[in-house]
Image (cartoon, rainbow, N blue to C red):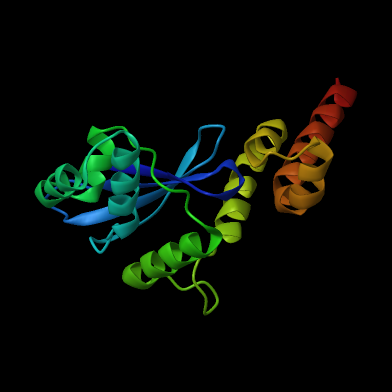
Length: 179
């Protein structure tokens, strides 16, 4: 079972139950363009009172009476009700994303220079990984208006790969001069 929560800037956070033997929860950042990056696996501490409230609000808007709604929520988790009745969960705020990432980092023992992974740090990491393979895909994924913006932000991350390509090109030129 997975719940995908819309977040800021067209990104989403997907919370999915891992296999029952692990008893954990996995968090994944999924961009509007589709690629996803798993963050961490942690103990199952995900609580979703906002999902229960979203279910209450949406079911009431569909004409359900309060007793029906509460009976349904007594029988199932908010996550189950949201999935079963195809209710769009509330958007994850910037602070909500920060809190989620901090909790996941704490649970997994991840420490990044004395800090936890922040949403923009995750975005930068994803951007770097994609940029190394394809600058235009990085531009589309990060929703930059221009690939030049992407180059300006990530060019320094690609210096080693660029050096290797230049050396390979130069060695090909030297090989053709020798013939």
